[in-house]
Image 1 (cartoon, rainbow, N blue to C red):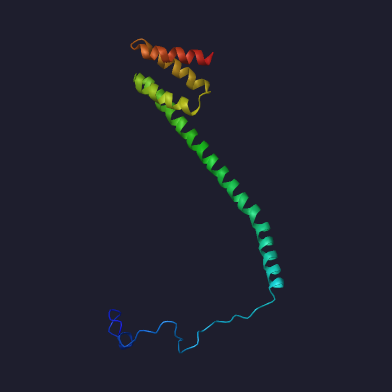
Image 2: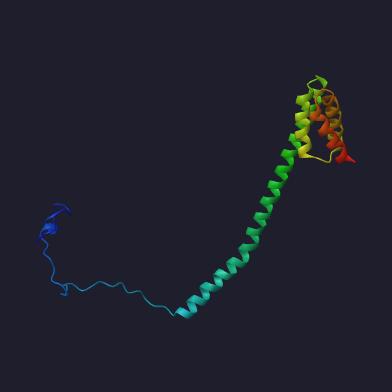
Length: 149
């Protein structure tokens, strides 16, 4: 009985079922590899890898530290630029009498640098102007004054 379904090649459909536990005609093919003295070769390979790791690990650690320092300096630079932009925007909006918009800009700048004296003074002035019309701003002004004391 042949095996149909593997294609129309003649060798596939002319095959017969094999008897169970029968020997095959051909010898199995084994690929023999030459054996070296494993102890000397293994010792040399292990020593080469240990020296390579000993040399490479400090370099990898230095690259990681350099990358962290670079990311830190980039973050500080971006924060400084954003702070300057928000300060200038807040000041310009105060001059144009857009007090609520100035408050939002100054509040964002305060979130970046909370200990800056100029930003704290501008926020207190802005909150005191807004406190005249809205009590919520008066509460924020009280919190601001209590924190600065």
